[in-house]
Length: 380
Ligand code: AMP
Image 1 (tube, rainbow, N blue to C red):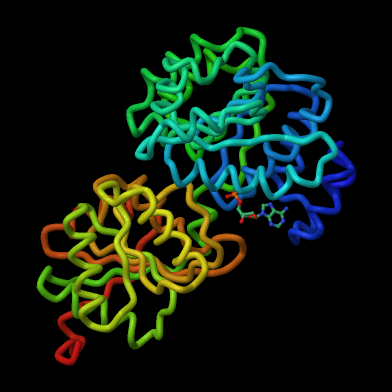
Image 2 (image 1 turned 45 degrees about the vertical axis):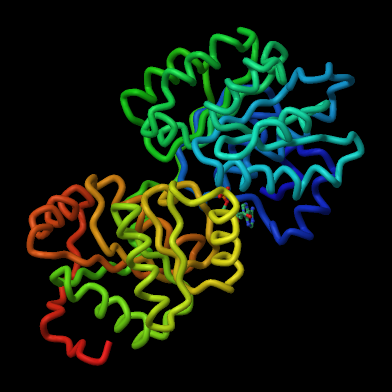
């Protein structure tokens, strides 16, 4: 079914074409008509499925019916777990909102940066995209009222729970009017999420797109048995011999992320670390440079293993394995998306061997292992 049959504002159709959205993705086919009809929606879908546009487009369509808003009383609230996702969602709103006759103002607010400019920018905002903590600070400062929220979106709700936002989310729910539309998106459906969805959603349209295991089939996975002192040379060997131009490397700690990026740079490889101890501007700059191809290697902690959409990312390397199998799947899920194949490589030291077996068992897939001892790493 084409976009023109989903009930969207006709003004959006041209922009969709210009943005190379030729046809709706499956989640969009189902979610767009349901959201326009003001149904609640529970979407189980990964980043890369097109879930952002699946709510942005119908929300913008519905907002065209809105006559007037009271200043600082937002009609649409989108809650997200990280600053990066907040900015990314705002970009999608911006992509489309300018083509509409009724001017729509969207704004992303998040912690880690000064609150004052955000308080000032909150003027006649229709769509507020916020991380929970910063939103509550803004509420406490009377910069925004949630009493007119008509549509609530929880994006990456599972991640918000993992990051410990449950109490803040509950506080936010208590500030919202009881009559409203609720749209909940999550990559997985955990028990905690079930409980939120029971409180929140009324007769939701349930949409489940592409299980993680289907997605994993798009990814070639390899493991290397390698001791810690050989991980650096092995990483450089893989980058050089495969002529890798865009690579996301995961470490388990901030310290190790900095360390790996430093060593790569010392060896003439264009690398930057991104993690929670970096300033917001450094994080944004690194991610933008990585997305545009200016930066070849981004070394990250799990902070960005979810939610961030990087088109055609060909390689992911786990310099260290994550603790949970779920995180492993989310990390390697940064590659092999949107019909482009990808490679995920994991470094496994002696200590991590059993753990890697557990991960493979949980994933339901066995990974080809290579012994790094057999590779001549002398020159790397
Ligand atoms: P998301 O899952 O929202 O992070 O979206 C994944 C990527 O798919 C984004 O880069 C979107 O710009 C792109 N995208 C979403 N829907 C479509 C579509 N119908 N056609 C082409 N690209 C799309």
